[in-house]
Length: 243
Image (cartoon, rainbow, N blue to C red; front, side, top):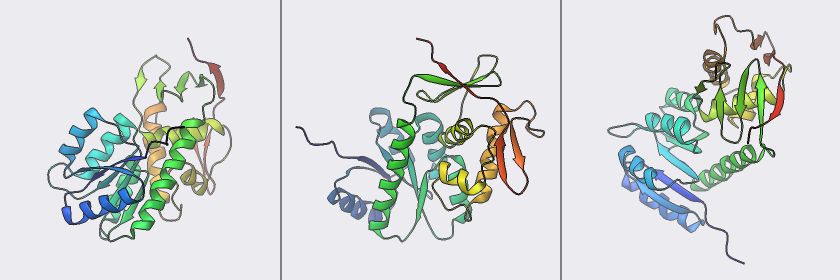
């Protein structure tokens, strides 16, 4: 029986003094690590290969990590962990809002990073395995294809959603007309402690509303339940995807 292929990581950091020893450590832990010293180099690598997870420094010359993180979330749906400095709290929050799956603060313990990598990959695998049948979610004329991660408007137009917006919408569609508080939503979507980033949930809900509500300032589908959280006030049907 062939050995299981190693998990492939792309490590993007402009500091060779951190990047190279970290790559060596991760390789010793059984990961296959590709290094990039810039976002431009990372994009070049991604044209030919898709890793299982990206470790991404925020502060880099040229294109910064947040810009690349947005691309990874919206265009590639690749799990991403941000590598951040202590003073970058706002950047960490923005990173989570635009689609990062987790973050670690420099300097960090490499064993903690390995644990975070495995945790993010478990969540990603669980989310990918959830749709066991080739079926669509239909609500208020909208359709979501979980396997292809394609959201279609009532008019038939494809609407781009980030990986975080997809997971948030899936949480609502799997629990329609149920109040989901911020703790539960953040655990479903980010896997982070809700008391640290509860505003990130509010911002993600606002982003999702702007895409699916007729008037996002007066939402009718994703309703705010004061003191409770949010609720999808819509009937949801699971229908067979067309062949």
